[in-house]
Image 1 (cartoon, helix red, strand yellow):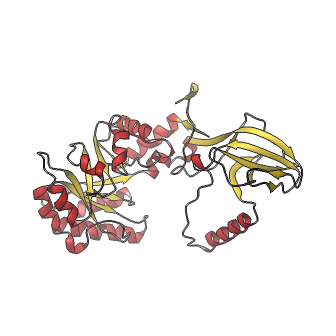
Image 2 (cartoon, rainbow, N blue to C red; image 1 turned 135 degrees about the horizontal axis):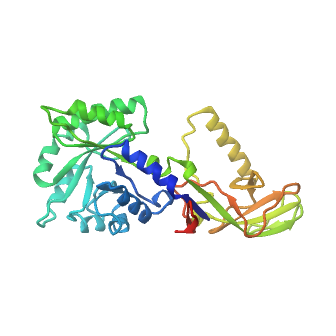
Length: 357
């Protein structure tokens, strides 16, 4: 499995996003959006931003040697996480705090350095955060911790999201005046909130966490492909694979790189919020029940079906007679979710050609 990056286009997109997003906090978490945490830390460093966000305490080590600024941990600090406790007073790490009990525990760990934190406000996401009734704790927390601001993690952008952002930001700042960190709202909304909450000539800073739009916003800047590892001609009824399914017709078994270890065939549940989405879900389920699950691989211009579930690092694809099979060593397009994909090779494509990264 290969990820090829058009480096110039990818970085041009990054710069454009940073330029139109004052105070941006790039998010690098999980598999690094398919690019890897280390690479994203290096990109953030070259962009000149002062803060980067990671998902969990265990990811701090993956970025700190490649990025000189502050590191925000988005998962709320918990006293039962040994890595979080160990790093609690690291001067470069900013912790998300979402419970009153954790504020007290974090403040009483001992040591000379006050932990740096952002206080999370509970939103309609209902995931983490202090309720509106608990926002007064911000003032008390500031006496024990180095409070960097409030953080508001919102649902995906909509008019309701913007209204919620304004309301919660106003409530939080009224309880304790501090910068507001936001997600899933446009720059214009963040700037409007900053203006609305400014007082007596003092402009209140708002900062936006951005991940998907920053790294994946220009789909033309990168491509994903898989190498053909083997090819076998088969006849209808031939037994194939671990599970010995029968070939559905005359054609070829194409063995391509990429399996569950790379994120192939791993799908997240969908909301099915539209009739079209529900119809697709029903159709997909029917195909899978019939043993004809559509694969993410495109061969001879069409998506082809799996012959059986993907293996750890390869997949078996069926191509019927009448199509033109690839040759061993060819690379074919594969469509993957970048947030779950792990690539064997990452290549950079520049004006001077392709160079393994």
